[in-house]
Length: 106
Image (tube, helix red, strand yellow):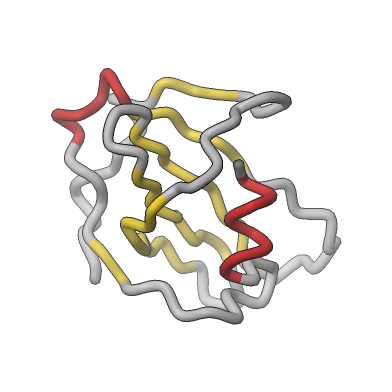
């Protein structure tokens, strides 16, 4: 699934090649159906962005969390529709406790 999102939106250490709307953090109340999936970064760029996906397995929506970068960002994007829900080879974390609600930024 992350490969499909990376390809569709051009997610890399430098950002996105296709615009994704900024968003607030997903609602932690949906925690039972949320899983976190890290997007592997093989760029070896020290001050590049890192991205992870928060996927709602019930609604088939995903939010992308961008962190890092030159000035240290923490920003949510999405939700986006997920057309490929295959989670094979993905290391999943259930995330009710990981959704940071204190930093909400569209």
